[in-house]
Image (cartoon, rainbow, N blue to C red; front, side):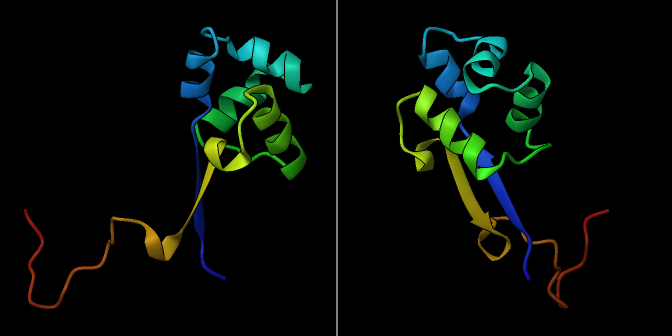
Length: 88
């Protein structure tokens, strides 16, 4: 199974929603402010239920809040071709 990255637009959505605070979003979704902080920073991925609750707060589709990027689609690749030498 390949790894993936889930990014989110929560901070931007909060800003465009009257500069909603993390605490206000937490109160509206039934979680702690620390949970919202962790999700925004990509340290924690919400359950599907919480993801839908967050999207509902912003009255936007789930895909506008969270983006799934499979590892093979990431723009940066750590491998070095055999003819390339690392910069030192």
